[in-house]
Structure formats: C-alpha cells, structure tokens
Length: 203
Image (cartoon, rainbow, N blue to C red):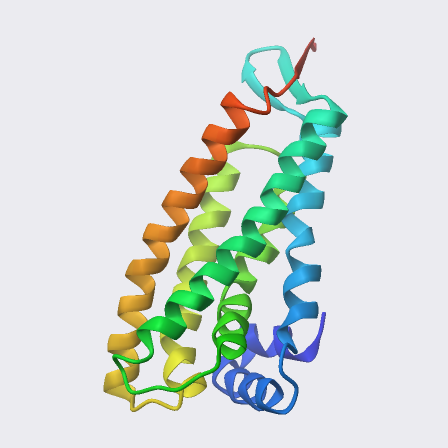
C-alpha cells in the first residue's frame, strides 16, 4: 500500500496536501492509483461469486459460471472507471461556481483518491453476503464522505466555508450519479448479459 493511501486513513489532512502537490508536479499521477485499486472489487467479486458463492435458501449455494462472473467483474471495473471520470468532470464544471480553477485531471484525481475506501471495501467481495456488504459499504461511504469534506477545501485551495459548501454540492451530485450508474449496471446485467447461475445443495 502506497504512502498516500496510508495517510488517507491515518493523516488525511497531510495526505491531501501531498496528493495536490503530486498532481501539480505530475499530471495524471492518479492514474496508477485508480487503475490498480479499481481492480480490487472486480477481482474479489470474481473469486467470491465463482468459488465461494452465496446462499438464498437453506442448504443451497448459488454461484456464477466463470464466463458470467467475468462479464460482471469486467462491467463493474469499467463502471468504476467511468463513474470516477464522470464525477471528475462534474466537479470541474461545478468549480466555476465556487471560484476554483482546478484542471480536469486534478478533479478526476481528487475523485479517485476520495473513492479509496470503496476500493478497499471491495475485499468484502471475497465472501458474498448481503449483511456484510451493507456494513462494509456503509463504512466505506461514511469515510469517503469524511475524506470529501476534509479534502476538498485543501485540494481546491478554497476557504473552509466555501469548501464545505462545494463539498456538500459534490456529495449530493455524487449520490445521484452513483444511484444512476448502479441502476443502469443492474439493468444491463440482468436484461442484456443474461447471467448463468450454478446452484448446488450442501449439507
């Protein structure tokens, strides 16, 4: 785990200062972080849905066929990348209202680092379970929200009051984008890709 990631969880204020400096010195510095960490939920979900499975009824385990799981995880990976890029573009567009002048790369980079808790939460995909997913995603959402409100004023060089208003606007928009993308992904998965489920009796 790289130093910026560790600092995001231990010293978030210092982490955002370092990240902003890196993005100013090296545009697209965030790409490696985004491309690699976005693999965590995709790979873990593939393993969990093909080798572990989940239970919908007593004494029954449901798994995905490898081909269906690969489709799901590929779709998830592309959705993550598209969602981060889209949010970055929205933040860039909204920055004009708050007198900030970040570049598109800096905005996408900010989203990529803010989404780090969701990437780490992807490890929960190794054991598909509804309640585990809910708890882990709720924790990831809470910490990502914290990173957003702590980091945006620092990263965008905004006054605290202005930065908090900017962060609140981004949070609301982010929630809308997240729900929209998830719904479209589910519809595509169920209606177009036609997943193949494998059921087995245990016990």
